[in-house]
Image (tube, rainbow, N blue to C red; front, side, top):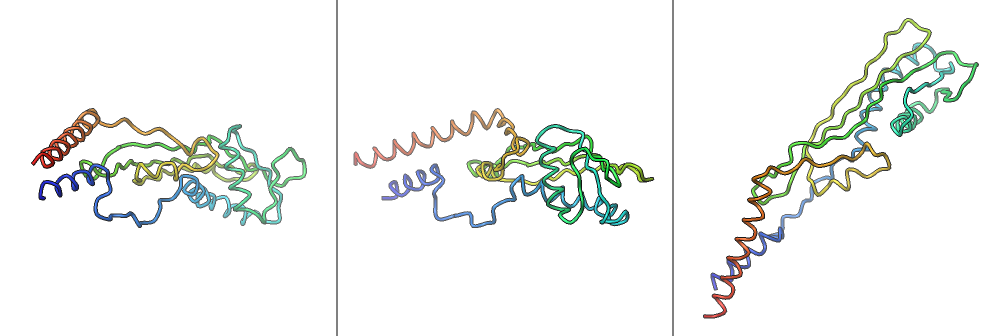
Length: 205
C-alpha cells in the first residue's frame, strides 16, 4: 500500500498537479499597459512645458520615426493631451513645434530560471522607453527621456503579458542553461521509469 501511495505522489509531482496550490495571485501587468504607464509619466515634462506656454496655443507634433513606435507614441499623446490643440499634419497656423526623436520602445527577456528544481519557470522582463523631446522656437533644453523597467514574470504568463498589436511588445526567451536542458529531462525520465517499475512490482505481489 505504501508503494502505491509513492507512485501516486510521484505522478502528481511530475504532472505539476499536486495538492491544491492554485496561483490566486494577481496577473502581472501586460507589456502594453506598462509601456503606456511609463510613457504617460515621462510625458509629464511636456505637460509642464505646454502649461507654461499656454494650453490655448496650437502645437505641431513632429516625430522622427516612421514605424509602429510612432503610432504608439501618437496614440499616447492623444490620450494624455485630449484638451490640447495638437496638429500632426503640415500646417502654417501653429504657435510652437514639438519634436520627438530617437524613439525606442523595446522588450527583452533575460535570466531564465526556476525557484525550485522542477518548479515554475520565471524570466526577467526588461522594458525600455527612450526618446528625445524638443520644443522649437523657445529657449528650452532638449529633454532626453530614458527609463528601464525590470521585474520578474512566470514564463507561462508570456502570452498574456505580450497581448497587443505592436511587435515591440514581444521578444524571445533566452536559452535554458545547458545542464538544465539535459538534467531535468533525464530526471523526469528516470523518475517515470522508477514509478513504472514500482507499479508493476506491486501488481505482481
